[in-house]
Amino acid sequence: MRIRLLAALLATQFTVLAAGQRGPAQDQEAVAIRNANEVYMSPDTGRVKGAFYSPANLYTEDGKGGLRIIPLEQFLANLAKGEASGQSRPTMTIDFIDHAGSAATVRVTEISDVARVTDYFSLVRDATGWKIVSKTFNVEHKAEANSSSQSSMQASAATLCPSDELQALKFLAGNWSTAESPVSSGGAITGTSRTETILNGCALWEHRLVEQKGKELFDAHIILGYDVTTKKMFLFYVDDGSHTQVYEGRREGGSWAF
Image 1 (cartoon, rainbow, N blue to C red):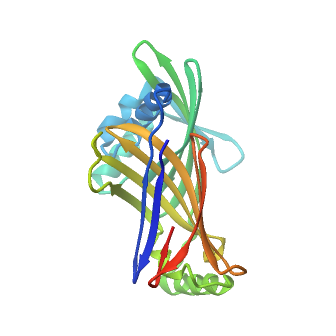
Image 2 (cartoon, one colour; image 1 turned 180 degrees about the vertical axis):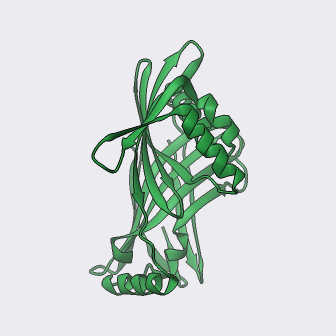
Image 3 (tube, rainbow, N blue to C red; image 1 turned 180 degrees about the horizontal axis):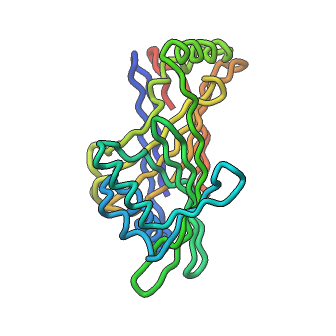
């Protein structure tokens, strides 16, 4: 496997390029499970029903210490109402896939303006392929705050980190889609990233998925942090192929390069 990671900071621009390739033993079942779950994650709510076996249910805590059971048809009706009102679907990322034989579990994180939802999907493979038999989920509602209080919180958090080396990179927080340039001979390599500031602004965490022609190349987690003792920036990389890399940043003309 070959991995390229490059980070550069020029004024307000920071770029991370990553590419990788697994061997012929790539887990095709995991790819099929991911593809099945991505039907649920589609922004087209009309496709979501096709991700489930029928009947299927969704499960969560009811807020009173009991179990809430949501039938699939009720869930689909709620999605349709949200779409009709102009409500967009949350940003979703697959955190992990675990499977054995014809059974699988997938965890997905959904982030919207009002909540963070953690989903656990149970899937079964039959003669037609993989489908979801149930979804169990937890909802964390985001605290309501006006813009002035949010600014105050952000300023307070910034003062807690003893280094300001990462301040210029905080714009990276969010959800991103990337494309390789120039395009590889084997086909375009595309990626999606969810990036967050962590540890009171002292580090950046990224969950990155890279694909080529619809097939996963790697699913990786990256942490970028600055060490005040050595005055060096470090990038830590690990992926689902058990590949781990540590890169030490160096200053080049006012930029950080790895």
